Length: 205
Length: 64
Length: 48
Image (cartoon, rainbow over the protein chains, first blue to last red):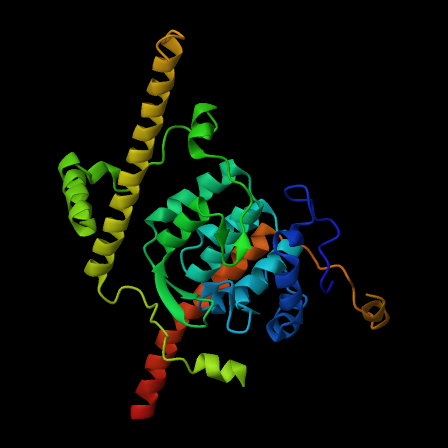
């Protein structure tokens, strides 16, 4: 298999999973050296070796070159690993870029219920991530912010995210029990929140 | 050549964790608090809208 | 595609199992944990 999707892969959101990455970007990935040299014949197991070497997330940079992060995402879309495996990527504690990759992949391919269930716990992950910007420069942000983008934005890493059902809809239908529970919730008091509110207001003013 | 130019940009950042654990935790806590605040505001807005809708439904045509 | 088949390459990639993935993660981690020890001992040896 070179650029084709695994023959036993299921359609995602009614289409070939690879199509979740726009054609023009896909073509650039297929043309990239990293794809040709480092992604050939990877499996859901061996892709881990590549993922732990990642040093940034991002979409395209410089002269519209795809990041390695995006190349590995396309590879996962080809391979379509079992849900259990994707969960292992996400729940691993040791390799933050593998976690980020797994989270991005799940956001592209998972059901709304899976996305909330497996990504929201990562709001508690405060680790730093490096992001490659379109300009080619790097930016520092954090895992929890990346997760927030995945759950709230339409476009992350130059990729259009599939529609995600609104959380409150899933709460009403009983698919999710109650609102998101923050790990901070227990130690949080109203005073602290009010203080924060005042703080952010004065910042704006 | 293009690749060299890009990597030569003096714009790299350090993603090493736990350099200043306390500050990193405080920064995360602030982000999380802002998210909680945002979620509460959104919930409040939704409830407000529901109440509004209910009120309008109870109004007569003349009142509208 | 034909070209690759002629080269005797299988077009089908073996599917990994969750167990293989779990084992690989553990192996990687063990290896990572070993590195500092190795370095320290190497430094020690260098001193002697």
